[in-house]
Image (cartoon, rainbow, N blue to C red):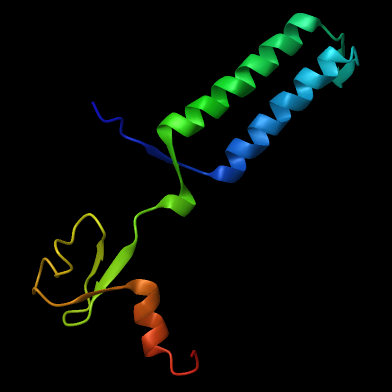
Length: 116
């Protein structure tokens, strides 16, 4: 069974994991933190919970997330100028007109006379 991956922002995952690790460290070092409701006393169990939660988020991100850098390539047909994802094209041919497909970054590099 293939697991369908969702697209996740790497920066949000990284910030969340770092925040949870910092929270765990503060609790392990017995440092009290301030909140709107007053002072939160450091508790070893809260540190364990934050550490486990950070590990679960990390494992979730590895198993179920495709980071935005890993997205499918986008291709453009040289003939009809339609844009398709890598999954939509077959054997390098356009699904609409059977023309040659080229990666979109290469297409715009080729059409930009100022880039080499």
